[in-house]
Image (tube, rainbow, N blue to C red; front, side, top):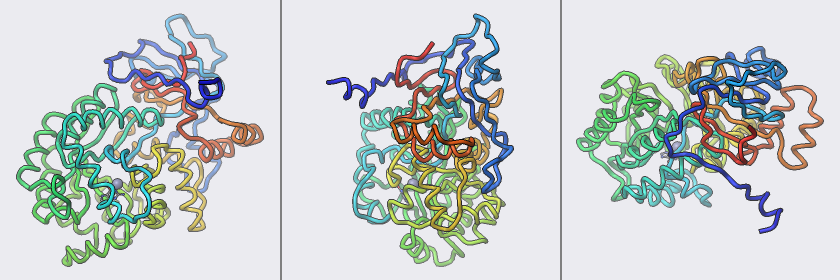
Length: 457
Ligand code: GUN
Ligand code: ZN
């Protein structure tokens, strides 16, 4: 392999499954960027942006302890990782992604319902096997970290072992993970259906073993209304109230054919969301993927129940599902986070999804700022999940889930970065032109879990 090849395929260092403990005192040098609140739509000079160029980010015992200008000396008690000239952000939070669907990312030629039948369901069947589930969970969690995503809300498969292995893998890596076994007792092929009784027992077992353990939480995971019988939806609704802090994740109003099908299956419901409301599912802390075809009453109900929308722009474009109305959700007070929805989505890279989110809004004549976009992948997502004290920012006390990024990679991005004058211009160009190849290091609770090069100590 020649030099050029080596640069195209940099050596990646992963230290993922060992129980590493953080350095007691760690200082990371770089340009620190995070948010102290939610930027207003369209405000490119928001006071909620906290930018601290060339600072040390101080980490003690795996948590953020503060920051100070790089010009101020640090005493010898600090282990230093000098990333000067790089951008340091809170680790990204992907609020909707399917672990088994790495196997079907970038599958050609179908919209949602055919895509599920043709590609997704066959791939998910493999996860009945514990060894497949284990390997898939490791592959997926490593991939998240290699894309700068340190926390995620994940759909496993219908098989309990798939959720179990994700929890175990996240625990080994110290990651904040919210997941659950998929509920699906009809309109799915053999090998991918559960039944109400067994599903309830499996969920309760997983909740007992994992919910609230370290940084893990259980999400009651209704795939979507068409694949659960009314009895299963009612059981899931009961589960949502079974233990404090349970999440509930599902898909809603993604695709017009899907919405029509739900209307046929549940004629008594006022809307697609109302199917979930009638089953008691709004009792869980709700994470609703897509929400493209909601109406004002749906948004009012989401808001009233403290639910959030996981907007999945690359998926919506790829599957041709539609253009999400971010402003309508915002006007209704519903938190919006950005998600990859891989494998309907085409990349785990949050920058790529944010760049797609900008284009989706542009199609509606709206201009998404880099601040609203990045907030939706960090602090805004954490807020929607009720985890703002733990993840999504660089505030003291938060877990040190932190990623270090090259500002620019390659001559086009480097030139664009060099001529950008204002901070928003620089960050917007970074968000639009960068991806996982810009990632230098990902720290979880102060431990470097993914590094591209040897750390610059
Ligand atoms: N609706 C039901 N299942 C799925 C899925 O796996 N991906 C997406 N994008 N939508 C869904
Ligand atoms: Zn999805």
